[in-house]
Length: 178
Image (cartoon, rainbow, N blue to C red; front, top):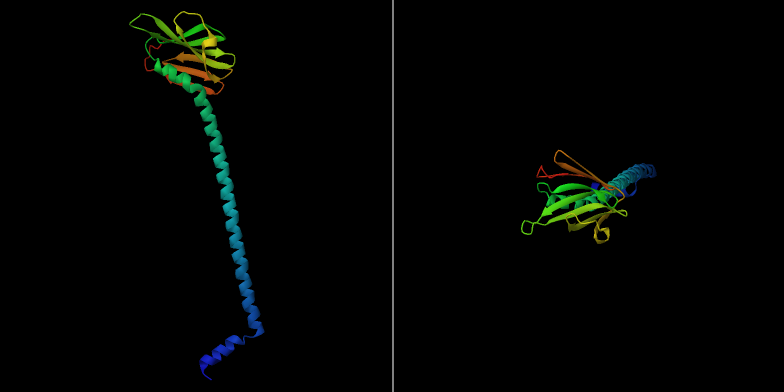
């Protein structure tokens, strides 16, 4: 018989002791593979939990920010649109306290018009009226739900406070009034 044939016969007729040693080594490889796979699964699950938690946190912050923008956005936009010398005033006779009054003068007719922003029945409302006319909240447009509406003017900055938060508007015209 050739040496090649002897090697085949030896390979086929491996002793029982050698076979057990081979199977034992293979069992350790299998155990290591299962352990490694388990570690990868645990790491993936931890990454998934961390990602989900981060996404939830970001979503909550975005929702809170949207609420602030929806409440304060119309007020700050109206103030910026009417930022002229003497254009921002305070009226103490609003239906439920002070009102922020934005004054516009019509150069052609000489009339004065007011955009009044004030609190009325749990909402911040905006009313457009002829200057000096009485307040008519039933004609006002609701801007946002809020139990709080306050404002302060200092050093060219108008600070508006509502339930949703605080907004500061830097008036471009430092003689804005208020």
